[in-house]
Amino acid sequence: MDEHSTLTAPAADDTTLVLLTVEEAARRLRIGRTTCFALIRAGELESIDIGRLRRVPADAPAEYLARRRAAKRAA
Image (cartoon, rainbow, N blue to C red; front, side, top):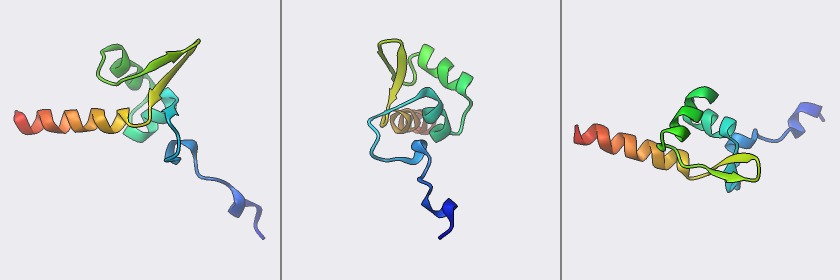
């Protein structure tokens, strides 16, 4: 058996996660880490602090995209 066949999927694709790192959220949105932090600072992408960690709820990237799509349709 090939050792590479036992590797798991990247965490950004794991649908069981409740919280994502900023990097994982950025990967889901196909944007850079800096842009993702800018969206968080602007209040456009939901995030929470857990101690010294910043996490993005797993459903927040989809909600952000839905709001952007709705705004585009309304324009």
